[in-house]
Structures are given as C-alpha cells and as structure tokens.
Length: 112
Length: 114
Image (cartoon, rainbow over all chains, first blue to last red; front, side, top):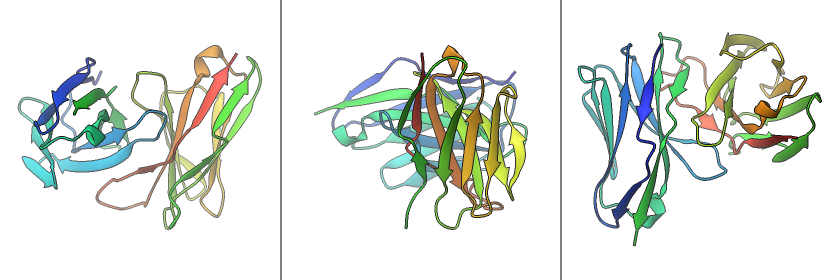
C-alpha cells in the first residue's frame, strides 16, 4: 500500500537559516503533491502544490521540489522566522482520486 | 469573505452515543470533505460530498455518515461512538473542477469520547 513518510522528529533550527523538510512516498507516482502548514489545534492551511511534471515551485520564502525518480519532495523555508514554527504536512494524490492522502507531518521549531 | 466554519468547537460524548458535527464551506465552494485527525497523525479522509451526494469515501465504517444541504453546508454523523473516535474532525471545502485541488480547512471540532 502507499506509504507517505515524513520525519517524525522535530526539526530545530536557528532564525535566519533555511529549513528543509522531507516527504518520501512509496509504490505510486502521484499526479500532484501538496504542502500544508498546521498550527496546534487548528486546521491545515494550504501552502503550495506541485505537479508530477514540475521540478520546482516557489512562493515568497517557500520552495518545493518534486523528484519522481527518488519519490521525494523537499520543502524549503528560507530566512526562517520563529513565526514559521508549526507542523508541516505533505499530501499527495493516490490513484488519481483527487483526494489528498496526508503524511503525519514534521514539526518545525525556529529558535530566535 | 467567511472561511470554513465548524461547530461545535469541542464536544465530550460517552461511548455508545451519537454525535453530529456541522460545517459551512467557504463562500463560493460547492464541495465538502471530512477528515479525522488523531493526535500526532495526519488527517485521514472520511468522505466527500458534492451536489448533496457522497462522491468518495475513505476507509471508515458505516457508523460514519454524512449529509450535504442545498446551501452546500454539511453534517458528519457518527453513531455508536467508540473511545477510538476521539480526534479532531476537520471539514475542508473546495470548488469542483478547480485544477489546483486546493482545499480550505476549518478550525475543526475536537471530539472526546469517554
């Protein structure tokens, strides 16, 4: 079955550095992959979508890459700020259903 | 422009009881999806409603049912509650046919089953 793997350990970085989060998947090539941000007790907030034929997508300080050969997406936040501290979820389309399947998320903590 | 709203915010129920959760989608959206999120996990898809019909369903038992109204709002019903149903229940709305597949999530309803 499809597995989506995100690092369960929290990522701790210093303010101003680039945070890099990883999303790996197995068994299937999704049509698209999404990244969401979730704050404690709140619903996820959509950040970026990247399609299978795109290598990279940018939005302000955010950058997402998608390597369908490695079955991996990397999510970068440049010049990170304490306000970027949150859990980041990746989600991908399974079987062309257009219903995203979510990973468990990785917690990012940016220290001032 | 109101985003996705959900009610109630928190709910405590006893095993065996039934619960109804409500969701109003973002203005202009016609599709509502429901997710269950256990602590430390990602959201798990329960089902999706469009044009007042269940369009897709995840791997959840029949105890989970839903409804969509003509104004696109939706309800999630859970019967015969189990302790394992304790979770954050999220509603997400979207617009059918959009190529971005972007969903807007509500704040969720925290359900505790004792």
